[in-house]
Image (cartoon, rainbow, N blue to C red; front, side, top):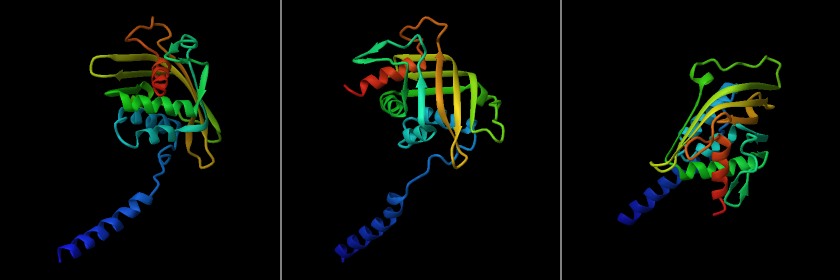
Length: 200
């Protein structure tokens, strides 16, 4: 009798689990504007400990995404990695994955989003640029060491075939007017450092 109950419960659990295991979630669902696209990135960073955070982050990036480093960062060396002028979506995904997996906390705020003032593109726009967006990106590595990147970023958003918006270009200008040290960093240098950890 006990064995029959165990078999029955196992079958019930199996058939309940199958629909969830086979379901693929579309993380692009909320990208109905450039503002919601950037908000998805900031929320993914702040919820980096969630299992789907990386998927939400990368879903907001165009297939041809490029991250452009500050000229101040180009040529800097982290481990065996030398910071280039830019990198593509694959590099971005690796860097963000390492960042999400290795730090205690991330705070990422965008002034225009916080104040509900992020501009909207014209109705017929296929691309939309928003420059000098004020950013505040703080990373608590281990409860003792904190990186703070404050400054601006220039973004280019691209409308997809399904009318959703994704980030096509991100030009980093954080901390370009500040001497970089163990605390004051740029977003690009933080990403580059964690990209280098992927190979250790």
